Length: 254
Image (cartoon, rainbow, N blue to C red; front, side, top):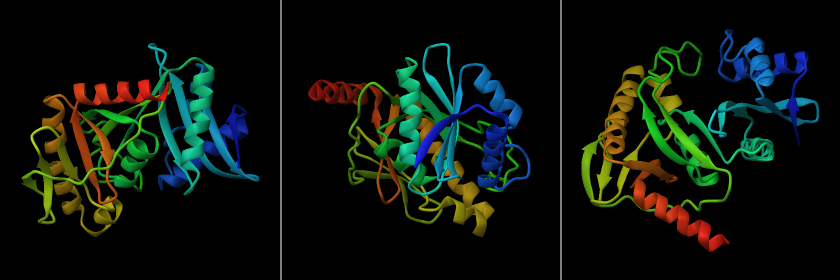
């Protein structure tokens, strides 16, 4: 497996086509022209190659505060983690200390990758981030997104805990949606929301609205999301407690 920054016209066009294929659309997800503009502005598209086959790609750009905004990422199974590390290496070598990106809160596998595998933290929930989307993966659904922040200067160990405490709301499938022990909040999402969408757009919409209600309320109270269990439960902690835990882990690692 090799990773390289792509800057030539055919290479960038190939990545644009790859993004469209992953998102099951004939329209541009990010056009060749847009990817060239990102490169020209100091950002980069990094491709993952297995021999000559393109098996993953990610595109990021620098923000005024010196952080990197990762606009998009897609990869074959098993390629996502080393691809993200390659993007981190590129960013750190240019002086970045953190990276941000968004993802669909209902996609539990992405949540687990971001929060547990990488150790990022969810800092923001935005309702209908993109507005209507017309690709084959998201068509017909509202585009709510969580923003994650990945600290590139150290590592955060994401723990896993069993949801406990009082049930505060029920999910569309009739099982508990949210619990709290007074300090932490747990919120459950579907195991496979893509399959839920295929079977019932109405049920997927109900899940979207239910999870939105929990997150928006929790973030207004000063929570951030710090973990995701294998069973599909987010764990949310108060910002101060999460920050103190991260600082303690950094100190212990010195």
